[in-house]
Length: 146
Image (cartoon, rainbow, N blue to C red):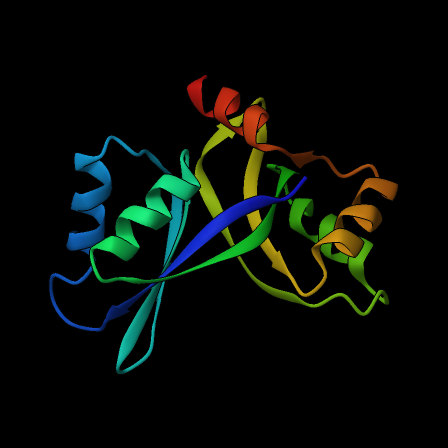
């Protein structure tokens, strides 16, 4: 299962993060998880939200450069070696893990991690063959309600 992620480009200056967050809050759009990366000149705010298309349109109407990308959410056992199991499954496949970040909530002893792969379809196929659970949009919303 692939999910849509928004990447919002921000100036690297004080207060830049608050503007898109205020817009989403005012529109009632929940941020399920996010990551922020920066360079000297700009930052990239990566968001998984409940209403991706609505959020994208809102942010673009308000002058933000927004890109939609596909990510994969995986259930990772919260124990030593949990992440290594996922990485081991991908070894030798040629699939590049471009970046990853985590949700703050656990679900029944597992963490949820967001992965951006160079080839998400091949990654999903490989991970499922290794019995690694991918989490879809509806299942994610249910897990975050617990």
